[in-house]
Length: 326
Ligand SMILES: *[C@@H]1O[C@H](CO)[C@@H](O)[C@H](O)[C@H]1NC(C)=O
Ligand SMILES: *[C@@H]1O[C@H](CO)[C@@H](O)[C@H](O)[C@H]1NC(C)=O
Image (cartoon, rainbow, N blue to C red; front, side, top):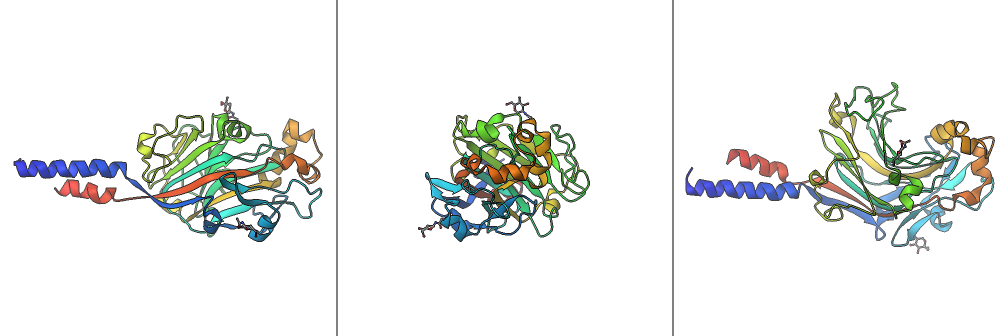
């Protein structure tokens, strides 16, 4: 190898190293300065049949269910009205933009504190017909739950071999309604355990090869680059959940996702298991009775979001190709 060639080679390797660190570049950032420009209110009937009335942007702002507060984005519910007609007023917002693959980082200060009948979620999904575009659930739980369950839902033909599932089939039990879930073994990921430490940061890395979910509690350790413009999840250690291996063409099962935050009540999950929960079933005959009659219980049923950032893969592919042709 000539001296010139060696230099050239060295140059490519150096740019490769730089590119590997900058594999993700910031695409969108939503926080207290612009969140409601990038997210819209969903005010239709709850697709999960909850005892909830999702409000419009104007209703939510007028009744202080949503707005900018405490240097973040507040998304709450009605905690004053007894027997609200048609369901307890609440908020469901989704990103106006849709995303396919990328790195999604949400810094959250507070989640709805667990209550009987409640079902909060931070999730992503693609249309037009569920579950064809796939769904990624990052924070989700019901009633007095203590840990999040990371779950994917897909159409048939997507099975991962990761070992922390009861079933790796994301279409389980055949309609996608159970999906493939990885229950977190960390009480700091959900509800009171999360709120007591001032929350933390969740990240989803979605590539053609894997969907990985990370959680970093506010109390640390937190990666230095997580709030920056070019985070590198490859250096973050093991994710909290990794959906990989097995037989799943991620590119055909997951696409065009909106990012969603909501709080619903009762319905297809919280309502279904209400009577199985010894604490909740002792409080009221039905889920709806409890949610309708105890507004004051839902004062802490709010999200406080510091930021949601979306990053896309950048440049590294081009640099890698250069290395092989040099
Ligand atoms: C809510 O309404 C108030 C008063 O009209 C306005 O100043 C504020 O910007 C609105 N908030 C949002 C998030 O739109
Ligand atoms: C929640 O996490 C704790 C550890 O923090 C664990 O002991 C417990 O079994 C988990 N609960 C569930 C339902 O997985």
